[in-house]
Image 1 (cartoon, rainbow, N blue to C red):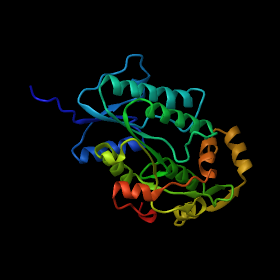
Image 2: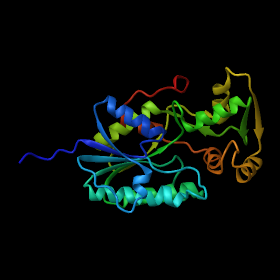
Image 3: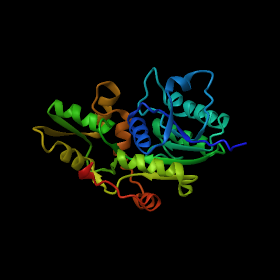
Image 4: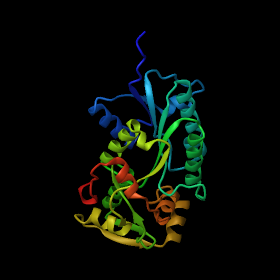
Length: 269
């Protein structure tokens, strides 16, 4: 009897920014994919996936509302993804967590991501957990935020603006995830998913708005948090501020050595 070959990659959260780009990249590289939607995961009866050798878990949320909690989106759905892997005999899971997440995290978002990481680590599955900085590409979250501010002719900088971000190109992210699915070098590792350059948030905003007739305005961290708490249309949400003002910096050299790819420079993204 011929050996049953598993040749597909399952992607949960395939309709999001990273999911859409990853699906397109894998398709261009002749890799078949199976999409799992949030609605599918929320059902009582979970699907059984055939011919899948790995699963990329992109389901989650960075914003908590009355309809959508961190517990439900980041923890409970991760449990269901693990169940799907075990029932479908999928051996490997790749998970996108967040830069700065740790067992000592204090923000609700980071705590939920840390708990999801621990579920995956204790699952018995092979895994690669990435902790990304801002992933930049067409229609990414941060770029859309900046575009909204550009339309209003004013860019807001919470706090000093001197905190560091390490943006990474969505194209590089797709390449690295693809490598992690195939290479044992990424097995059972937690890896910062960051770009090659560190830049202050204020400089990043200045570079992004240099060709536009807009003004910049600094807002104190306290007032930024008050706005986030009291105004649903605030430019920055609570977790946005926690991530930015946390000044989290990742280990780019570890990622560079593992991946071996040529990374896209900030001004080329």
